[in-house]
Image (cartoon, rainbow, N blue to C red; front, side, top):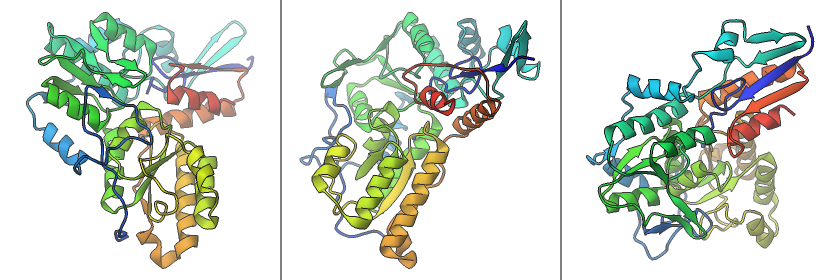
Length: 388
């Protein structure tokens, strides 16, 4: 047969679904204080804290929020909502059509001189399906209330258009950040699968709205990781994109942090740790990607690693090993636990499974690799990169 075409998808079709979805304590280290909630929540950046505020325990606040009768994180698995998603063409796995046919035909379809291959792991991951279905369930639970959502529920334009058609309003983004002035007491606000910053949660709680939190549990796992760094007074090195919604939420739960987007940036940091360098150049390179008041001279002594859950797992692992090796070289093997903490794997299984499926397709050297998903999706972009 002719060379196959590989299909990679981040929604509900074809390849590798980037479902249009992160020792002892050191003394005298600074802990960044998050900003107090206000009408407009600023974007995450180097100015993401307010020194005038009293210390704020983000994790404790979220724990108390979860006890509120106006907070809902339960996934009801409502069949009517699941059927509505399927009818709208945004179910987790298509029950009909070519994709469904390919699943029972060894993930292959041949028509004339074209062979189409489907990745053996594709479509929405569990966290995305859960988030979207919870949004549908919210519309059913609150049929007459105005519902808002703090961001795209997932990075998939079709899904977001379906919610918009259901009357869900997306919070406006201004040059200063998100504007919550249109959200009124008694209305409903959905937090997307990527999560929301603790500042947004605090503001919404103060407004008296009902909160439907669809944050993926894997994202919450990353929040716990950076919280563990903060307790040790370690700096969180976060493998991710500083402007990505998930990383914006993650850094709001961190103390001192630095976001590195790839192995090259991590190598730059490690070289600075071992050999020093131009502080001004360092700060310029990581502009917007660090906590307020970050100082590479004092804040790279104790490190912990975490990640945006949609990043390439192999690269996160390499960054972790590099940091560990660097701190070992700097301080010695016996002192490693006082200077480095690996919080464990915080990349979700579904992300890894789809990445593996993509690599498998690439090995077959198709003439064309088709990746279907939102162009602003981190997973979609990674699949595009894997395909070469």
